[in-house]
Structure formats: C-alpha cells, structure tokens
Image (tube, rainbow, N blue to C red; front, top):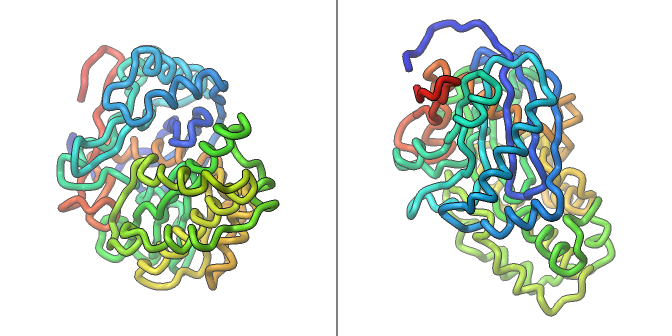
Amino acid sequence: MAVKNKAEPIWIAGCMSGTSLDGVDVALVLTDGETIFEFGDSFFRPYSKAEQEILRANLGLWKASDEAVELIEIAHAQALSELQGFDFIGFHGQTFAHDPRGLGTYQAGDGAVLAQIFNVPVVWDFRSNDVAMGGQGAPLAPFFHHACARYIDAREPLVFLNLGGVGNLTWVNPAMTNPAETGAVLAFDTGPANAPINDLMQARLGKSFDENGDLAGQGTVDLDLLNAFSRHAYFAKMPPKSLDRNDFHDVLSQVKALDDADAAATLTAMAAASVAQGMEHCPSPPKRILVSGGGRKNAVMMAMISAALDCPVEPIEAVDLDGDMLEAQAFAYLAMRVKRGLPTSCPSTTGVAAAVGGGQVSTPDGAKV
C-alpha cells in the first residue's frame, strides 16, 4: 500500500479485547494516522461469566475453538453496532498465545467477517508482520501514545502506563514529531499486572477482579515472595521485550499457602514492583506517569506504584483521556497508519529490525489488500 504524503482525517472504529478477558472495547477516533483530531463515542460490551470461561479455556492455544472464535466475532459485531459514522475498522482480535521467538503470536478473530457485516474495510492481524520481521509484536500502542502526548500538548518526557492483564509502558519524548525516529519512544511490557490477581479472585472467590483493591488492602505483603519475584531475569533484560499473559502464571502457585487477602496483596505488590523496575530502563526520568487500564482503578496498586516512584502517578483521566478506551482508540489510530502505509512499530517499541507496518486489510467484497 503506497504511502501518501497527506490524508484527510476519517472516523475509524477501533476494537480491543484484552488479556483481562473482561469484554470488548470499541471507540471512534478522527485521525489521519499522524494527528489525533478528535475522540468520538465509545462502548463496552462485557463478557458474561460463561463467555469468560470459554475464552479462558483457550488461553495458550495456537488454534482457538470454533466456539471461541465465533464468540469473539459476535461480541465485536455487537459492540460495533452501538457506534455510528465510521468508515474503517481497526480490529485487534483476542490474543490467546504470544511467543514471538518461538511459534509467533496469535490473535483469534477474522476481520473479513466484520468487513462484510459493516460494509467497510477492516484492518486486523496487526502483530504478525512485526514478529515475522524479528520484532516482539508487542506492545503496539506506543505510536498512538506519542500522538496522545502531542494531543494533550505535553512538553516534557512522560510515561503512558497500561495496567491490563499484563503491564506495559511507553516512554515518550513529545519534542520529537516522528514516533519512529530514534529517541522518540521506548516501550516494553513491565510484567504481570491484573491477570494473576483476576485469576486468583476467580479461583478462590468466584469474582472477576479485586474491585478497588479492597481485598489486597486487607492483606499483608509476603516480602520473601516479593523479593524473590523481583529477582526474576525478565526485569534485568533490556527492552524492547514482551510477555504472554501466562508467562508469570507460576506466581499463583507461589501464593497458594497465603490466605486470600495476603495473596491478593502480594500479587498486587508484584505488579507494582514490575512497574518500578521497568522505570529504570527509561532514557530519562518522566515528569509524570499517566495510567490506563483496569489497574488504575485499584487504589492499592496505584498507591504502591506511587510510593516506589519520584514523579506523579495519575489516572489518564487527569488529562481528559479515557483510560478504559485507550487501547481501542489505539487500534483505530493504527488502522489509519496501515491504510496509509505508515509504520506501526519500530526498533524501540518491539525490537523489530527497522520501522515496519503491520496488519492486513479485508474489504467488504472479500478481498485482502
């Protein structure tokens, strides 16, 4: 797809179903793939407990069941039907397995299905090309974060921290206009965030998550387990680097002997420690950290991160951005970059050899561009 020097901004619907398995986020963004002009409507379509169990049963598989794939496509179609006025769709799909230096990366869901339903082109399979070119395939939101920094008129380096199932951060230098330029961004997965806590809550209490960190707030952190966790080789590894949702799944067995509150507190402290160690890799100290994802609603996790760092740690709503929809918005933005033939990742975001575009485009007539 040829690069165009200029492009008119269009409304694009972005879709995200994350590793926390809570549901489907869809959001509208008006963009030309470089500048964010406006954020539009958004919608959240939650997964029921039964649906979560179907998806959970497929985690780690390199070919999801037909039932799971159909669920993903139907849920996204239902969510998108709540939005109007979009000319393009960015469809992330559901990550079930991620092993960039082994079997690759796998996001279930066929963008061609949505293209036929909504009669607009759909960009999907965003990560495979990056992995094929030697990259980690994740995280992919950094170029969008760079655009957000310019949207909020940031003048000094800052960090966008996403606390989803896995934590990831993007350090941004907003003084640089091209996100693919050396020194503009650095991004990587920090470590486990909500996934182990959610799995603990589901297994022990039948709940999807620790609301507001209430259970963790009643517990005591096991410092021996926390210190052992902090010595994991991943944290010393230089970025870019990425994780699968289950790469730190063994922490659940480590807290098995703890009561519910102490286990939740310890897993929450592990998530916070991951972030604190990740900050050591930033090229320069950020002036602020803006937090998105479900973890920003966990008061205990936020307090632990704040206590470990020397700069303000704030929910991203502090700059009037939507922390629930940021990743869906990111894939709307990235879809426009794919449409224009612009790169979606670079060496400092995924470790790919050179700036590269990802994603394939399915059109309503069944063609792939």
